[in-house]
Image 1 (cartoon, protein in one colour):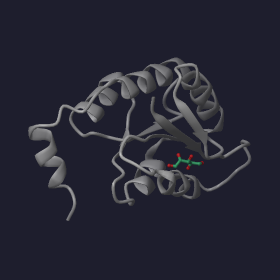
Image 2 (cartoon, protein in one colour):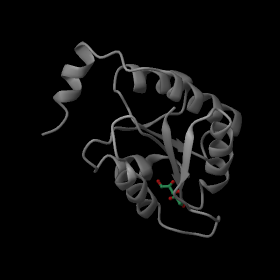
Image 3 (cartoon, helix red, strand yellow):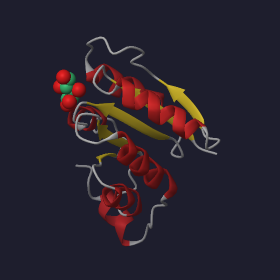
Length: 142
Ligand code: RB5
């Protein structure tokens, strides 16, 4: 059973709520780090809040804003966080299999609800392949 953290800004609030409710049915442990309304707010606050909550490598996060871009930028400032902006199921599968991404970023103004659910399911169901990909991940930090 995985611990999965969800967060969004106002633009991602509806999709974040939908996804967290969907994933909760799969017996994961869910944490909703806000935003809790669709009143205008600042996405970096929620990206940082989620990333600071990570306690061990088995955790996963899902960050949703309008495009997913700002969330990915903010999350990737945190050591140990590998955030991937995914707009297709292939992105999600390869982000896990090759990049060992532990935070999924989605754009609520880009990706429809049904596709976002499929992307999230793929992300959570795919394991990291390790091997040559681990060596490359080790080369990312400068
Ligand atoms: C908010 O309007 C929007 O800029 C934000 O949700 C996100 O798309 C930023 O990357």
